[in-house]
Image (spheres, rainbow, N blue to C red):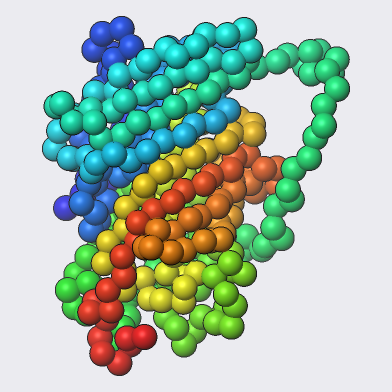
Length: 320
């Protein structure tokens, strides 16, 4: 059974082994039903390691990463930071994550110097930001209630699938993240409100925040990198109007984040997800984080994943 720890800052804490080399201090998290370490752990700890090698006045504005091979949850990861460039306005780092001699993950991060208010006022800017979609937060459900409505359905899923549901319940109640899901996130075909729409005409929204407040302000970036990978590929089922249990397996191939401002992960952020392309078992997802209260765009996310479906996981009457 996976370990669920409520304090993300402690869960992702790193220890410096030598100059520019860091390792995890806590056992690595493997999600229920997954074959390897949670992708958000790799993305966030790589970012955290890189941040420890740059001056305080620089913050991450983008990261680009590739998942090379599945991480083993029973082995420590060594994060090797390479200092690609140290400029006056931008700093570049590359992090390679190894288990033993195996490269499992690589991430390149660009940092921008934080400009003070006076400097920002002097410099003329072209500013624009997409507005937050108009949704009613009060209509979003506690994750357990949403999950039970669409997943605990003996008429759709085989018993072998339902036995794993308990681990998801524990993830929602004991893990480091709090969610508010739409009522129809996990629903089956007959109930799907977007049945007549193409996948690229559908969007998925939910809200997310940390269960335990962040102490270090810079950790806001790390936390958002962590939860930007949470349940992202699982939305593919909703876009294609398929039960969640018809996915044989899914793995992230790459992951990109653009930070537009410092996140505030102690408060609710809305995750808005779109699915513009699907083919050759690869699914492309665009996503955006908005602050619930200010409605400001905080970060943009792009991910491609490998998703393989299998109707044998469904009961005969529920197959497509």
